[in-house]
Image (cartoon, rainbow, N blue to C red; front, side, top):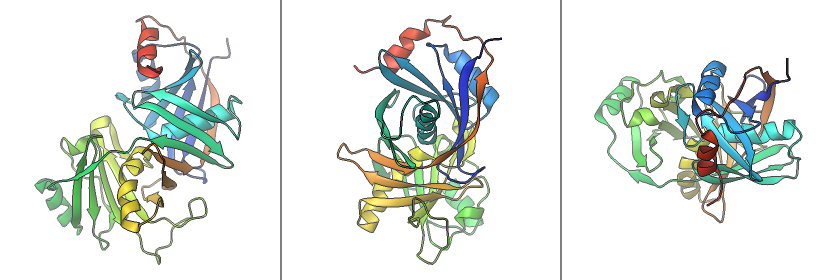
Length: 296
């Protein structure tokens, strides 16, 4: 039997085992079909599986949940970078770019931290859906402000007395089912683990049943979306976010000159091995990879 296709599972945005957000990463030897990747993602059953491919001298990256391809995923991008480091492809001083459906994403390593840059999206104040507001009131929670965004995610700021960390899964309908961020400010007195030596400024949870993800443990794209709000509110460029899921984790969020948000965090390797599957390009997937993941 051949060695197979390299694959790892990285727990992203946490320096503690069995916390953070697990992402499988598969190093493709050549372009493969979408059904093949979807099948692997379904079998590995992580919130996202990342597929990395070096094509034309560029690193290309795509992400699949167990049910569909997703246009952007922060934790699996961080996991892909750490996987390349594990495989010896990049070193601790490396800077590179992943070409993705959401455009080029700069990434790099800085000591123990992995850094990824994700696009931000404008938050637009909107009226909170009546069914969501009613459900939150039934949980003794109140909405301070509600937003929609061009990313497709919605976000709600909860009042400080709301028990965000103990909320059950909310019953979501479109468009909130495509991604809902529930967040709140943290006080100095609240005791949470440090993130890169810093106390978290805010915490959130993220639900996306429309993408096949009931609740995502730690969500880079959600923090990239709301970080500009917290930067403006707190009057500083760098803020620290925490995700109070049942597999918690956090990240440092910085602005960049390009307008993207740089997320810095850690991750740990849970397993490393090989997929014993034959990969083929039976549906002309090479051209699709080139169109999606190369410059121009």
